[in-house]
Length: 292
Image (cartoon, rainbow, N blue to C red; front, side, top):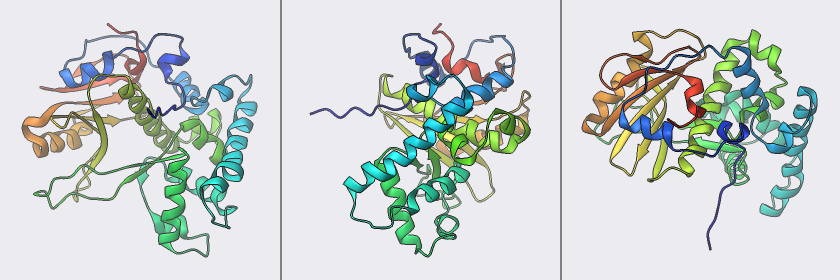
């Protein structure tokens, strides 16, 4: 028996192209072509808010997409979860998922999720595990090393699709355009899920983590290949990038030593730029660009 995890579509698939392995291989190769293009701007916000569920993308308007996404969540809570568990308080789950949407790309905080309910934190954790089992939530573990005691060992929470996040929070394209902080959260989830799906068809065994230490230096996504090499990805929702944006990646490089293959800051810019050996700022559209 083989189990295949079918997630929402990647941007490559939405564009009607055959999936390639170019981006992740370039990531571990530590080299990116100095490409030039243009900022995506509102198009990027639209891609993030739409998500990747085929049935939602088939809807003609943003309102209809949002309606389908909310109905999908309700159907899972009312049907699939009842088959998985004997928990009686299943009516809590849609509200819990809405609260989790507000935590997407943030450190997992069970107390914050438990706050509105008369439930203990262990119960909330059980509910979150259920939501993982029906592929609505992903828990991203921290990368750590036993000798590095200054690392934060709290996992991050990501929803399975940024379009679901937008629907659950009632955030349309105009809302995300006005609220750059919220858009940054959704964009990080968008990139994480895009990379996870690309890794599923890329050679090698890939594991995903995040990195944060007690100096508050962090890397949004840490990708490990075959247990022998590591890369870091920082996600930025703006069109500019500076040396300061590489502080977490530099710390990850120091922590991983010879395992480190490279680090990138994905941003909404118009060109790939070198920021020293193995460090690049890369336009986010390179994630799904045609394989070179």
